[in-house]
Image (cartoon, rainbow, N blue to C red):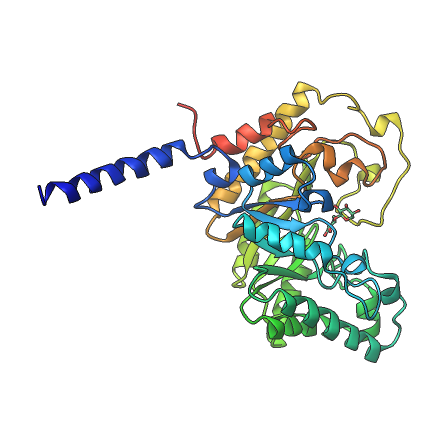
Length: 369
Ligand code: XIL
């Protein structure tokens, strides 16, 4: 009898483990759990758990979060001597409560800057701002936020440095300094440079130079974020793959940080994600106001499948894939670069129902029998 008991225990616990793993809910985060984090951007309402249905979808499908807006300087640091951490606190608590990977977006960015920052003209004042801003925010969440976008969108399309208020006042050393300040405030947190179109050859070359410069200058940089605001036909898988390979050859992690795929025409073939660009709307530019035709739904599913297939091929180099929003109804692409359109860029529709593209991403991990 003495020996039977431990045996029984072992057998029942084995059975239990088996049952629970079989019962594991099908979801993006579970399907990809051995590959990379699957994240989503959260709006202020989602951080505040205002809609229970949306909230349970977030908790079911995603294991990483980024704040879509509330950590940008205009919200978190609206005046020189005033920080507003009310929503940031809720965001971090939400991630902790749900055991999610928490990404901070973003410390140094020329867009959505607080008006007082835009007025800084003098290098001493800008240096003081950077030190105060980065040190205050990163130290506050030391050990709780897992990675930061230290600098966002510092490059032009040709790979040169954008003439932002930071470059104009401080010269290019601001880039190295930003990474040094962040590492000093939390030596263990992962630090990223994040941009759009940095999978395109010229901008990628500029980004590679930038990473090398930051490293050569003594800055700690752990990863590069490719925003991935993409289209049905572009960028090509070849350019995406080259980017994964070339960036990781520098010894940095690659994250796809703001993934969405527009199905709408872009004005003048606009590429990228400059949030300051806006254009006039017209019926021609909003072709699917009621529903997405099946043919495009299928195209979107195929595009997502081929992108995730590539991600899986290079999963050892990829840390995280984050969607820019939970479902189509809330996507920023309904309002940018033309206001009032109906776009379909994500894996869940306006009713929170999974789309064909969702299945195509899941099926890569759970092939149909
Ligand atoms: C966007 C948000 O989604 C919008 O709600 C906001 O109005 C503008 O910014 N690149 C970035 C993100 O790094 O912060 C931007 O987010 C999209 C482009």
